[in-house]
Image (cartoon, rainbow, N blue to C red; front, side):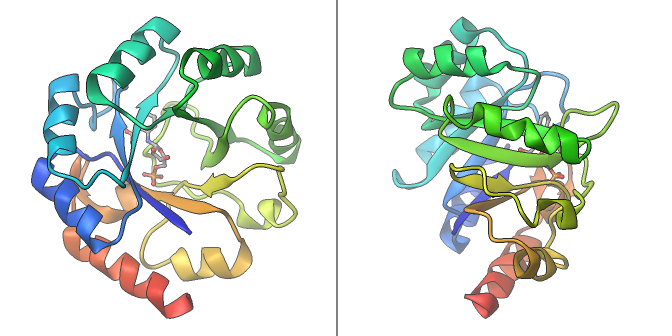
Length: 210
Ligand SMILES: O=C(O)c1ccccc1N[C@@H]1O[C@H](COP(=O)(O)O)[C@@H](O)[C@H]1O
């Protein structure tokens, strides 16, 4: 299973988290976020991590040209679209960035909203389900209603996100079988400052259920 740790801002923490077992690191390219990182900071982290780790930029309602510039400057392997990007936007971006994983994040409000996820499956590589928050785009620490996701079979790989922690990860994965998990605030001291003990505990818990 893929394990993405998001909101990396420090090269040493990125390196340590990759060594602990993360398969992907996420970089918040949303200027209003407390976890926002500049292109230069992303480059500094990427210099310290192995090639095989997926490097995902998180964007919200940014233009395709601006996303492409950051992808190419940082050599990102994937983009996570966390705003209100339409299926058409995802399709166009996929054509523009054919070798880059396109992940569409959906902040799920209810079961009806969850059904709209399937509209995206033909235009993206991967879906990511996060909890809805009226004021914040992400990194809220709020969990989804996992029961609502029990029948979720989108026809493409998907990440479970939203309020995952070392304490609730076993419950989540007992109930659901996503292709990957994505954690941010559940493994940090403060926004953008990851807690390596919590990350290590996460991987110990994951080993116990594999
Ligand atoms: O983390 C942020 O600050 C952020 C800002 C804007 C868009 C997305 C953001 N983070 C994403 O939110 C989810 C869930 O985070 P959490 O585990 O609940 O803290 C995750 O996919 C992050 O990539």
